[in-house]
Image (cartoon, rainbow, N blue to C red; front, side, top):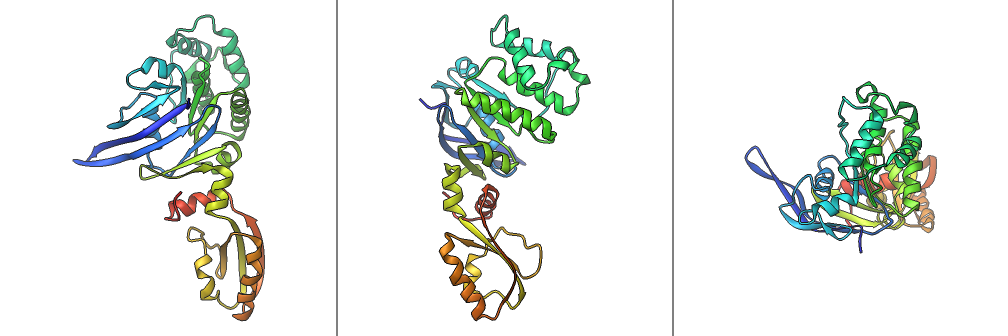
Length: 309
């Protein structure tokens, strides 16, 4: 049984009297125990999809199951299996941190939960703020409390929607250490983030959304290898890049200097023919280095109109 099963989910809104498609038939399956990345630019439909999974919004059509429970017909069971950390800082200013977490436990019918609350606070470095009023906390501390709220009922599926946006390095390290531990213990993690280096380091598999549709879905290693390959960065001191090599230029690459090019290569055997082309064209190379492509390169290529799936 999948942790989350999404089948042909569609959602549209009215904007200036016209329908605006937020999700155009999204289908994907997130397996139990995965650390799954849900990526895409602003407006791609990520938050809309998360809201539908969490039962905060309803799809126009399609179905979402959380641990086998329909998020509409079996809302209580589906919601009990899910912990969501939202983008927005939403909190009640009249409670302390501990009171907030006890209240959240009560929403799920959990009594005598202080031992787990203490463990969560310790792992998120909130222990010394346990009796502080929520309105007195910094933005970073409030975000830690949001994470703690999502975890108080020990959900098997955890969704993190931009959890480290605008927070310091210390919180990122603390959060990822704890979340990685929960993942090792069997929790399914779904992450949306604009920090692609985080997604590359943490996620086993990735789906990319663009204009409400899945445009890439694969394991991290396979996606990087198949979509982008390696890169050859060349700085020319003299001459112009031969037209025969123009098709290798990565379109999403922004050139920092004139006569600087990043070429896509699938393996190192292609390096010598490229150098031969440059010599024949009379080019003088000022600088050259090879590097393995990363998730950011893949993301830019796909979102820039590159080869989907």
